[in-house]
Amino acid sequence: MSETKKVNELPLKEGRKSLISQQMLVQNIPFFLFLSVLAVMYIYNGHHAEKAIKDINRTSRELKELQYEYKMKRSEWMFSTKQSEVVKSVEGYGIKEILEPPINLSDLNRNTK
Image (cartoon, rainbow, N blue to C red; front, side, top):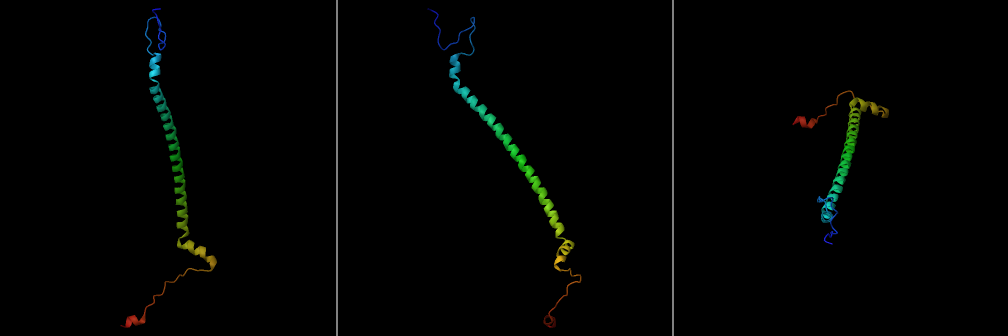
């Protein structure tokens, strides 16, 4: 009975020592758990970054659409506020454009002093 085997050791093949023993695996479980947590965090970070990029792209597309809409509305407004367009729009109410220049009124009392 001189050959007693330890419970923690794996059987060896023909005199070679095993590089990974059961005892070493058990001792390094916290490290393996730490590596697993890091891997999960790395995957989560990748998904989070992709989601953020999609949100940024969607927001920039919406911004471009709103900028285009603003420019169109502004150009329509600028066109509708031209003098000729205002005259056309108020003709239906019976208002006409005055074609003669305004009369300059002056105070007669002020000129005599």
